[in-house]
Length: 231
Ligand code: GTP
Ligand code: MG
Image 1 (cartoon, rainbow, N blue to C red):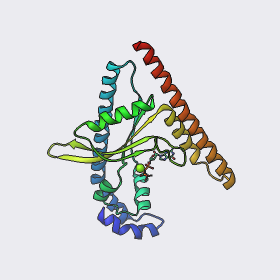
Image 2: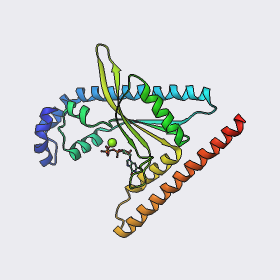
Image 3: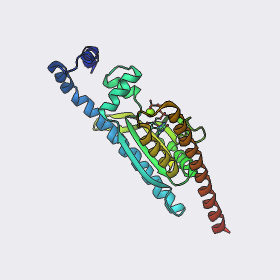
């Protein structure tokens, strides 16, 4: 990968990949694939942790706090794009340290309160190290995007060693997920005049405010029902 990095400039100028460059890629495929396999393991570990919490919570209260879990490993192309955007070296070590969302786990919950409960229980586990937390629920993005983002480190136990890898965990409600999925789809529509694009962005933002209100209302209904039950 160090050599690939040195050759990158040269290679970017060529429109056709040289045999020499393809050879280099081939030789480095193994360490890259190995790194990706660590991320797949990390995702399995994190998913299991959330499934266990979901089980435990469902025994305590009725109903499961988690609606679904979706995981993904960043594709090679997407990693390469981010490397270029962040202008970091294309080496295994640099990918491991600088791209902290190669492994991503998205936990979709029923109610906003569940997000914080689950995140707390997850972060209390002693093999999980919190590196960074971004609360886009309390502070939504200008787009209207809401979710709780955690960058954590989790150990992977291999035959002879223990390896720590970064995983990005996104926790959101069904309503937040619904908004983010549709906004993501619309984001890639091209050739929209600027003033129209502004109106659309405003409309999307308004929709996110509406969906946040629905989250609050549904949560209130739940607490009304829970109160009724305990009386
Ligand atoms: P990146 O370098 O893009 O990862 O940015 P970052 O490190 O600042 O991460 P950020 O906290 O912005 O979270 C990035 C991830 O959150 C994205 O990969 C999306 O999954 C999600 N995300 C962030 N903003 C938006 C948004 O406005 N709309 C949607 N649909 N998703 C978003
Ligand atoms: Mg990111």
